[in-house]
Length: 119
Image (cartoon, one colour):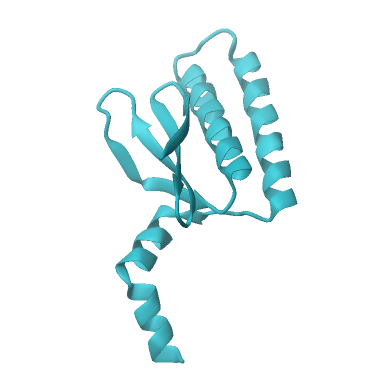
């Protein structure tokens, strides 16, 4: 179930509640396609929401630097504020998240097969 979205300059960061946690997926605003390699799964919703806000702020800041926007310092301040907030929540809840590549391996069963061979 989709619980929140945050938009950057070119990407939308969607937080989706799943049975095993909260997935943050990245959707291209122009095409609507999901960037599969940019998904991250968190155990807790506060960390997932803070991550989405931080990633969107980073997207806006990076776009302002590329487009040479005059008020890029304000966007830099916003990004650093969101980064600090995300880091504090992540550290307090001990929720680092799991990246998309590891998620695909785990869901396909390759991690379970390797674990069974080792034990």
